[in-house]
Length: 554
Image (cartoon, rainbow, N blue to C red; front, side, top):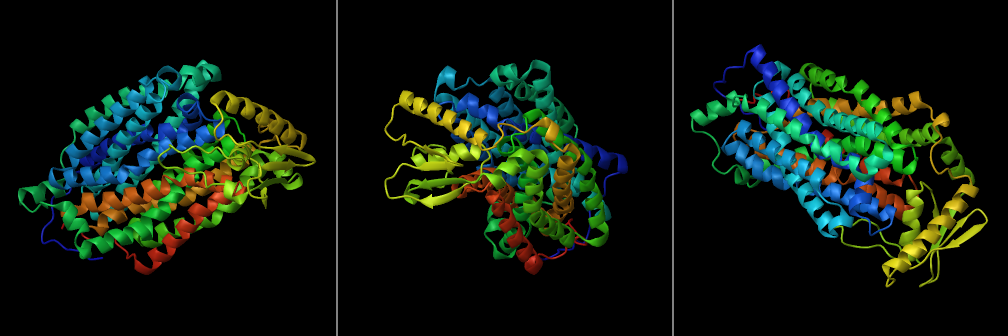
């Protein structure tokens, strides 16, 4: 990577002005992440509202795929708004992104469900999710570039680390609002209509964000460049069409971003889904665990950001990714032990075996959300995953209906292909009842016993993972800003960031659950973030250079 040293630098903003910049950028970005993350926090509820024509396990996968749709389009938002930010300016670009995000989120709260308007409901839901993805694709790059270009050289890591807290802060805010709403109106009302309230409240957050951002001034670095007429006329072709810049983009993507992307979503989204969907901890309790752990860990984003100004950024970032990857398997297994010991005992003492034709079993992930899993093997495996049950696989003759053995009980699945909805529902109901009875008889709990949950240990385990995340995520914003020249910084930073976090990290929960369903091991999905993180560490060690002393004013 080349550090381009300019002959002159723009005036650094005063202390009061800089604090205002940090506050305004962080507040708006936090609200935008609240909007974006809220969908994931309510994935099980959204599945029941918009994907009612499939069984609950498949409905959850579809809801996660709808959630992932927003991640899939984030790189396209990065291209659109990155170019706009490099040509028009930083301030006005992320004013536009907050408007798109706010209105799309508010509209989700007004959207009729499947029972009201049929297939149009999930189609509209996904369309709104795509708008959210486009908006967030332009938000992050604008915020970190804007703050970094206001910051003193020796405090860039510290100042930009406040932006790094906004994803976690938005996640906390979404969980708090959901928990407060659930507590105030009750679970039944929340599942029926109360889930809309957190989405509708976003209109007030939008109003605050727009008001704050309208009061902000353009970045002094960009303003100087624009006054001198040195802005890029074609930032996309300059950033991605010239090898000199493209190789930095690829280095950032594979040597930094994909690693912390999977770590971020594993330590916040996947752990919450694992607690609620696999370990059967009730939603409000799981939310409290995650909220407390995140609150305890959040200050370390700024601590590590400030530390990177002194000792450098590269080894902090890569060290955090490595430690997180090494912690995933032991921490998730410990979560099972401390959150649902009855499930751990059943997993060890009552093995489950699925006997099926291997050709009948598919990898249950479908980015378009249009494919249905109707084979006897897919149906029974989805139900076992939803119950948090490990199972081993045995081959059966071609064409045989899948069977599951639980202790001395042998249950036959069914093939739903060609069956009417009424017949499929009838067969599903019968299989669910017999499967539930057999699992309970074998010692598998329907839900985690609150009296058996070791609450301090669950919080500590989540904190450990988030702590490693803060180690990598706190300094990385400044590092990414420092890797690219000013004239194409917004575009160059945004695209790899949203490919790594949106496509690789954002798909992590969906891919992990599909891996679990395919293999039959509730921990098997962790291989996805572990392997991605380890590859990132190797690439980062070999190709990423230290950046803390780079002059970003050129």
